[in-house]
Image (cartoon, rainbow, N blue to C red; front, side, top):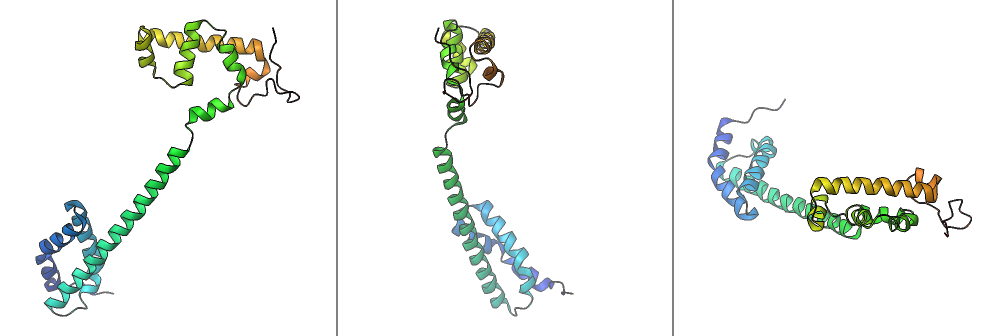
Length: 193
């Protein structure tokens, strides 16, 4: 079993704590980060401090511990920054879900949406396809948000009804990855009338 740290060693390290803190703060540029690093260094280093003899060797040794803690801090921060930069690049390169969804939607949706009442077609295009927020859409067309919500609901209902007439079975499955108009694919054939 390890012997507890002597009060002399602990008192000596605590007496130098403000100096240790200033040293680390100068290196990392943040009081909060310095507090954390000094505290961690105390926790990790105290088990080895008892083996050192003399005031000078103890403080020199602890400055070395702090120096290594600062180096580790920058290594971790650098790794975090690189990971965040990589994640940001992935987000920039990735297509928004709306774009991916639009690619998978049956081409009949566009054709059928064009046959709806113009205000319904506009509501569907702006809110559902372009991602305009409903309150913004309402302001732009000069109606209340409640009226815009009702209009969008009715537009979706009318679209669904028209798709069921036009596409039949495909529409009941959501018209995603539909094979309408693809010869021999087994999907519905668009009407030519």
